Length: 291
Image 1: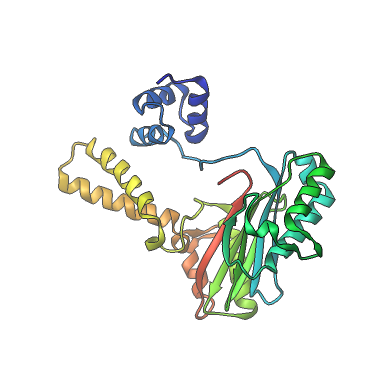
Image 2: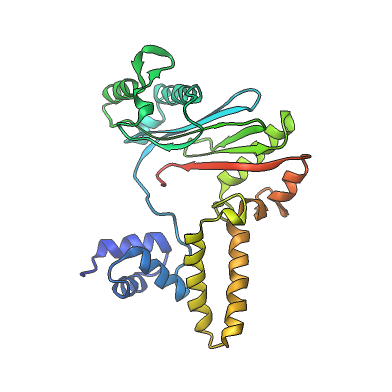
């Protein structure tokens, strides 16, 4: 298939590799951008893969947490422009939607919202004569922009839920701590949420290494095997090299094993252990424009 300049630019945006390398990788991969990323990584050309599924959305990501930390909600309300997203009325509406989601006992977890999602037909918590869909539609009519509720999260906990939200409303996180309650547990949850929001050194994929998706690990392993084989070393050595790379990968993307963003000398598991009995049950991170 023909490789277009748009395809090359998209791959370059994802990997940071040069235009020439991107074009060759796409040709080798038959135009498949995901396969082309693997080609570049195997050759050691890709600097860092950025997450797929980016959109041009603006808007607000809002969190709400109950005083005792037993209930929390997070929502992403999208607009077309940053001008509308920063409007006080839009921010106020997004805040009300977050509280509305917190009150919906049918949800515990994360949901992608479509126009026909059951949540949209629920009565608006702040005015029972309206539905959430009608409230969002009214906001669109008032702003003259396409306003959509993209995704929501709602956590209930017998431990504590904490949150962190960047000042600009573009990134926010919820973290549930289990095995502990009260102010120490809630503070720990918020501290871990801040770390997850920072995405340093990487945005974690899972709490523990056994929770990292098997298909993701398989993809990484295949890349490491190809890289190791190019060294020309014996098969037994190649296996040891790959095993070492996989363990390093787990430490990079597993939340509990990551170095704490505020003090890299400590791991997240170490600061969790500072609260007796505590553990991290789950987390969710929303970033504007990312899947």
